[in-house]
Length: 127
Image (cartoon, rainbow, N blue to C red):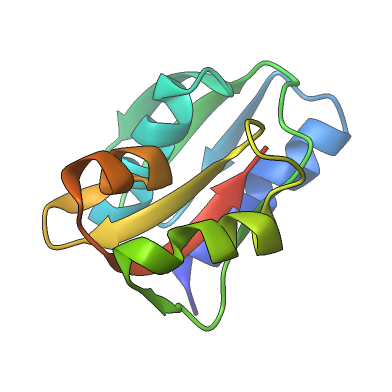
């Protein structure tokens, strides 16, 4: 079971049904970092961690701005010079959407990875 795939599918299903919020469980550090990146780009609203004594849950406020968000499987290893190739593959146009990458400097967007000149693995995309 991949928690990132589960979280992004839950968000996408609730967005399509025009819900105001969704509950993502189980919670993990990776899912939390990805959600904070999506939040910083303005696709989702407030994120609240709920400690239920087990793995925990995230309550996510939805705005209805997400057209598509999916995890990338297999997680491709990408060098800095090849990031643009994956932008073309997963995003609809040049300035629309965000690739989320796991790098040695932490989880970040493809734009930040280019600026810091660091490669990594493609985790997900959202637009």
